[in-house]
Length: 157
Image: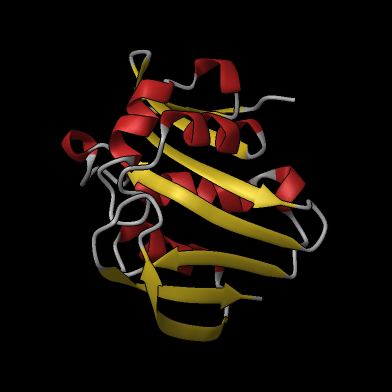
């Protein structure tokens, strides 16, 4: 069942049919966490996730996806707001919508991987969640042959 939320001229929806795969792939392929990711990989990951698209006037301006069993665990991935639309509280609103989603209630663990504490991480404060552990690690960028990157692993309970 798809759901929709409105805030002024913005809409968040879980309707996969509205997702603009070219916008999502375009952002992810230049991101530090999925640099060079193939289009087909993005498409397949979306097919098997709970997706949240952010739109203004029918144009996709943000995205997040949740990988979950709907009972105990959820991984928050590929969270972004297009640069031109940042600074308007959209990432906080997106994270709040995710936190309030009825199918994601009662989970005992959430995970978000990041190398910095940009606004989606700060927005997690809205949930009053406790950080169980924070681990910094080196990881290989699997979609490119270039170097290594830092990632921070947050486990919330």
